[in-house]
Image (cartoon, rainbow, N blue to C red; front, side, top):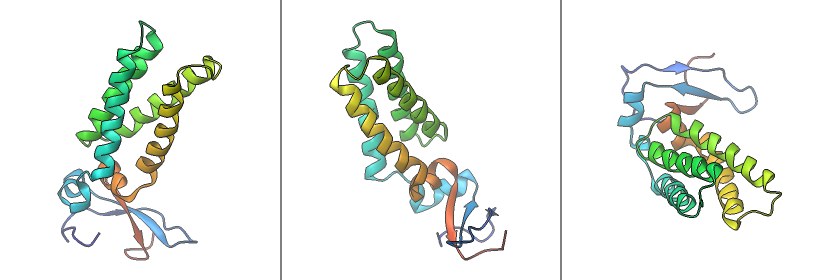
Length: 151
């Protein structure tokens, strides 16, 4: 992440003794201004799939309140990811928990869409939590390996 200004605010986290990596926290303005702070194709696709699944779930909900709530959460997740809101990852986690609840309470005999959404949500949430670009966009931090002050 060499394109940050020198006069910005950098807060260094604890250094991992095995890898030498540490989190460096920056301001939201710095994160948005960096080239890695823009949404890439993968993040646009994740947001679009959340929106599509949410709309599809609302369309087939048939008045089931769990499906309506889950569909609304998926739509909100997609929108929050598109506008780069930090709460998008937490809402993605909440809708994942709600989807797990729906699959388990239906006895795993529910709609095929529930299992597809569940698998997609696991993968997307893993990328949103562990990916370098999502960490800079949504959590305003990046990994630094061996540079910066010792924490």
